[in-house]
Image (spheres, rainbow, N blue to C red):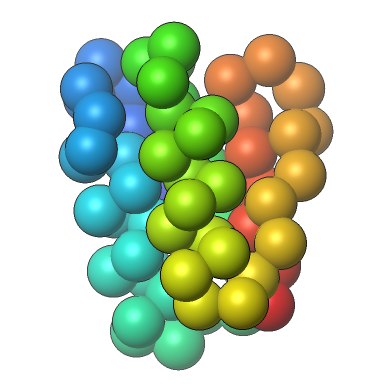
Length: 65
C-alpha cells in the first residue's frame, strides 16, 4: 500500500498524485487530503482506471484496484 499526504494541496493535485501512483502500479493507495473537493476528484480519478474509492475517515480515502 502507498500512502500519500496531500494535505494543503488544492485540487486537482491530490487526484494527480493518486493517478501517478496508480499509473506506477500501486494496487492500494491511501490518500489524506483536506481540500473539500478532493473526494469528488479522487472518485473520478479512481473510476477512470476501474478502481474503487472508499472513505476511511474524514479526509482519508482508500483506492483499490
